[in-house]
Image (cartoon, rainbow, N blue to C red):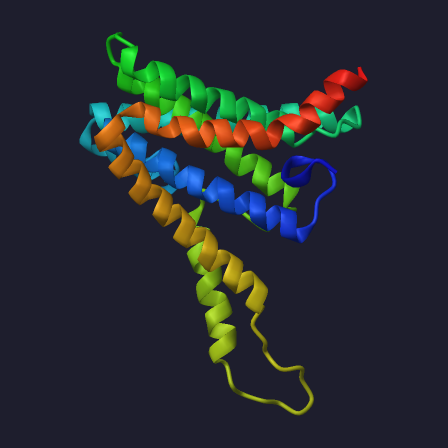
Length: 237
């Protein structure tokens, strides 16, 4: 029921939604870098930046990393709160509620960021993008049973290497089952990494040409996909 974002999950629906979110994550990550020189999905690099800065001295980039890390954690926390609130009430939109919030944040960001004139607006941008990334990574983790993460490319590429290693392993032992690769998992991981990459290319090109409004079409698409179960819950109440 309710397609990609309803409470009834299947592997196919999870893969389809993850594909859309990986593309979106690539766009947002690229826009964040081109706009303020910080990757909002790269928690490893951001953490390393903060650690190095404790020794070498804090710069503006280090403070951006602190804001991005904090916002990402708050986004994941918010996802857990919203999801569990919906789950305890048996809502069809237990997952979609989070995605609607993400879509609205991205839509507002795309429409308003260009006209925002405040000092240090880079911190506002990186905070919104980091919070959105935390929301997204947490909700896809929830609905896939921690099998998929759309912003964590390091983990996906690691899993690709593991599956390729299984594929290359040729030793046969009579008393033991053969080592076999999960072709479906490998294909999905490769697809998600490619979509994240494609999103990055589109985000960079789009930002150079259109500015922050480049994210608006993706926000509208996500809102359209996520709204049906939420609207159903509202009508039911």
